[in-house]
Length: 591
Image (cartoon, rainbow, N blue to C red; front, side, top):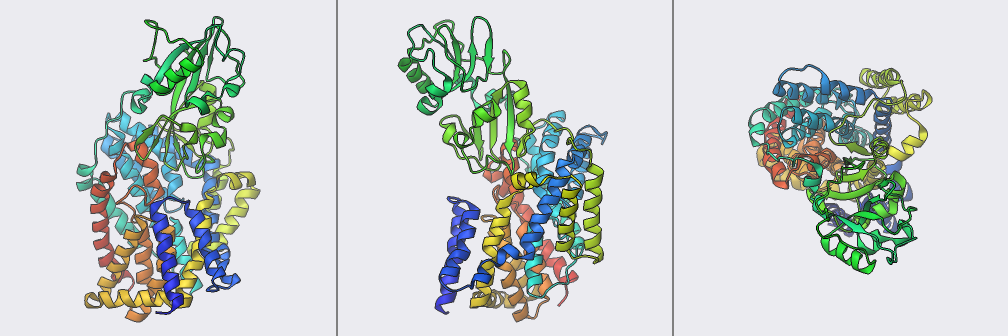
């Protein structure tokens, strides 16, 4: 082993550890990798920036824009609205049909877009069936993931493996080359989820109202402003109670009117009755320092925050939201949206204190209080999914145009008239020039994290190959699986890929293992496409943890799941799909 190989392997391990620990942003770690490789002289400048011009990066970015165009024209939302009210039979038949609808959309849209639209639909379906959402949302995520494996454009991991394979001269895979294998896995997954898997699905009963779910009702207290309070005459922004005491003023009641979700420029006057949310200790400290009075018998510490003009809405933070990675303070949430965040659920844990400094993540559930018009505007913001509601179709009546463009992309790529990257780029141009999506929306709403992760990690794949590290890893895998033959080698790559993608980004896993798979196939005399497909399907087998795939993160909060739920339901599904892949991949891609 040379010093260069040892360094590249150590850098790869360090990147994987940082990904798994989730202490630093994924794209931040990824973009640091080519810089390190460039400074150490392992890569040339051209190789260090090869990820930016890679076919995989360009194709994935183009597909994200195409999916955005379909959402912006209201096509996907219209399907979601139809799915909520269409006469589809009994509750289980309805669930099965809607899962099939999601599985039909996922091969042609990014899976996250499908799940983002259908979460409110499945929540409403669970309420109609008088069952907990936990019985419905996991099938939504799992079926959408499996549906994405039916075509090359269904998931970013398929496009990454395809693009990296083409760069190395393996260009025989077409749009529907993996469709037979994908349909088999989809059928196996559906059979499991509606038989044994359904028996394993948890029952996480939602509280009867949002205040109880987030336990915020007991933190809302009535405070009176006497004549001698130092708060008199000052605005809420000047007082800065959120920063100083970690409390939120929800309402101001005066003799003449009530002010719900007051702005920061609202002045405090003598005689005002404030309804303030925070911990008991903080509220007592605020009252003492500002000389506010806490009524005795008149206290309404159990006050319903939805009464007297205020409303609550529960929002899911989706990929592409401008709040991801930022705090409420940094985003000026209250001033921008004229609403107040009462609580946040992160990975099932409710946070009600120091919310202004809480860094938000994809999949967070946010409980927001405000007036109905402000909440309606907030729910229409990109990157927010209102739980329990289905958004109306978009304002631009170009759904037919967007559908025709997407169909043209699929048709031209599947017939070989254009390769996938060219077809996708042409589709982006048509989406923009027909007004289906605006350029500023692309900048604001496309999930750039995926793009930068690919741009940073593709050079790592180049370094693994250039230094001989990939060849060495391939030799180890081939040597360990030699007694098991071709099936054992395919199973090993599927298992390693599925295990890695459970703790790190699936795109990162695909980038790192693609060159290793090609070299291992060459050394073992196996059809390279068999191992490439094993990496594709293994990278999408993100069922055993809630954090391996973004759709699992998105359903974690609304479903009230625990980590163990994914291990129990998804772990068995992973094993079944491992056996399925080991049997059928050698049949479709013979040596």
